Length: 185
Length: 207
Image (cartoon, rainbow over all chains, first blue to last red; front, side):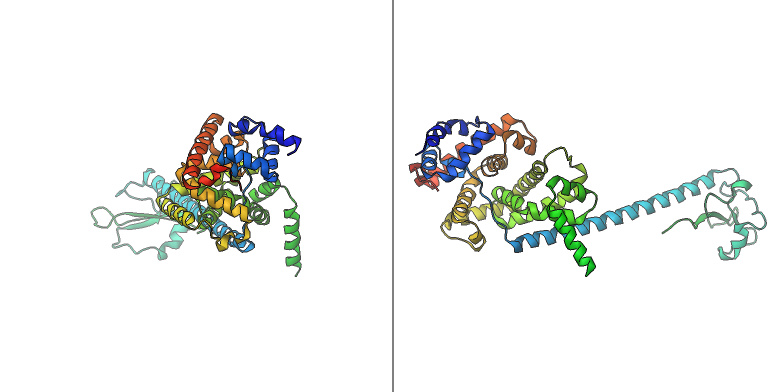
């Protein structure tokens, strides 16, 4: 028994009550790890003193490598999922923008369902693209660029609005669609 | 060849950085720093998880979850504070969640019974631990089944990880008085269980 043993044995109660300042607490723990006599007395006083020391599980290099490998795979998956989610969000945004443009076109004056559409100005993109559009069921059906005001017939970017109206009294519905060459899908 | 050399140099450089710098670099997407951090912290995280969940296999699963959570939450890490505290908070919470799940509860119970029955036998996994540490770990695993998750976490952090009460309060997101209360109750229950299962400790036996 050394002088320090006597001093530290007097601090067992404080240790158990969590009343020791951190430095003293660490000194006591280190001492208990080294001094079998004090450790015996401490355990006799309170058996939970047997745990008053750092108990570290050693992780073998193989186990650590397995954990690291699993974590790396998990991180790669998470990053892939994040990229997919981001692409989906961009697509959803583009679709919503296209739908908004379509709705705007339908609400504009002169674009009411069943109403007459202004003929596309000669040389506009709609008239050039006419052969690619569905053929009208009869001669009174009209295929035209959307009835936007002349100055906005070509919306922002490379988008073109097509409006196919089979005509009043026909069973086929009116169809409006947009070709936006600016979308990167 | 040059690429391999460059990667090796990058790893060597990362291994000399403190935890906080590694975390900041990893937050910027630096995978080498993140891997260094995982390698450095794996023993502490797995050890803490093992004390709480009760067996090595589950502890390794929890360890993986901890590091994945760290990766996804690194943007929330405040570098003014200790990385260990933040890491222990994640590890403790995930260990407690794991323990609470029905599956792990069954497995922990099975593991405890197994440990009580075969206390004196060394398993292959224990071969790398020192004999005393292995016996202490088995003793705690056998006894701690009677503790609540929070009591177990507080006791492990205080006694085995040597954390301050204020640090434990921060890790568990509760007050210091709550930590002391859990610690007091954990000691009381462990004393009772030691007396019931291993009365030789009450007669002054020490490890």
